[in-house]
Length: 145
Image (tube, rainbow, N blue to C red):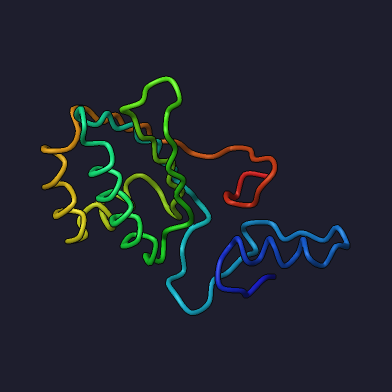
């Protein structure tokens, strides 16, 4: 049983051992924080910035990520530019928990209200996809391996 800070630390620890020993997600317990489920949820959010506003929006988005990255349920975030749609930014977030727990615990944070208030001036559209990881290759971000 792994008793490190988070799932990723446990996985990396067992990978570091190099002896093929792995620990299943149900055997991973957290210390120094809340006892979370092994469920994870991912958000894939596409933003279409208003003309000339992409860099201003990027600045607001990066500030939001700095805030949310300190949350206990936060695992990772990746921001990408769409090579074919120059006004689009995509963020791919991974969180510990479920869609319901994210909406109940993360969406209500005060810093999100401030961020949401800036979006009307910066974007014309936003689409959100809620995902649940089921398999992963090449990294240890999710429980899906």
